[in-house]
Image (cartoon, rainbow, N blue to C red; front, side, top):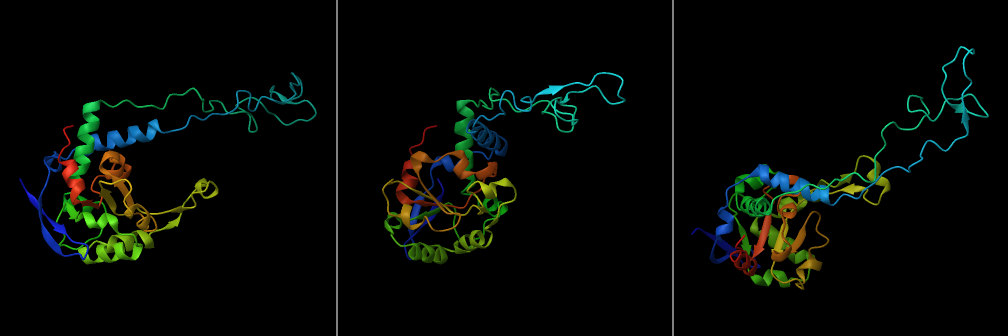
Length: 256
């Protein structure tokens, strides 16, 4: 069984720990992408136009003999409307509320996807290929002492990241925050922030949940709430993740 370093809250190597078997799962980017895309599809909200959208007009046709096309026109005007072949007509095939967006994935595939995405976080090459920035001296998977989850100040977390050698990635996310393209600017999501460090802890009430909230792109999760979408955002595996020692112990108890 392989081992990895344990970093103290000062960023120094304080010991080693056995890496759980789940981190040695075969890398399957195809199944990872399938599971993430299915989860995104299952979370979609049904949408569609009103049943009579584009048909709520008083219309009539002029008939033959006027040298114009025989289409529906506003009764008090001459502009064509209502028919989908008209410039101002209704949509031919509008979105339907009854459309089913759900995608089904086998339970075994979901388990393989989660373990495979977990294993990718322990591969320095996969993490670097995803665009994360860190020192070459960092050992993967990155494990810190349990005292880390009791830190209550954002500045202290930044200092630990710098000492370990992964502070560059938080800066990358901070500098990469840009205005979103498209209508999302009007829908309370004006800015798009790159994904950065994922902190995995064992205690849901740990102070680190609040102290890391202001770091751009940084997320904090417990082992019980880990899923493929968090470990591989967008279906791209190899997220830069930091695990506490107790979280690694809980992952070692995974059976599926």
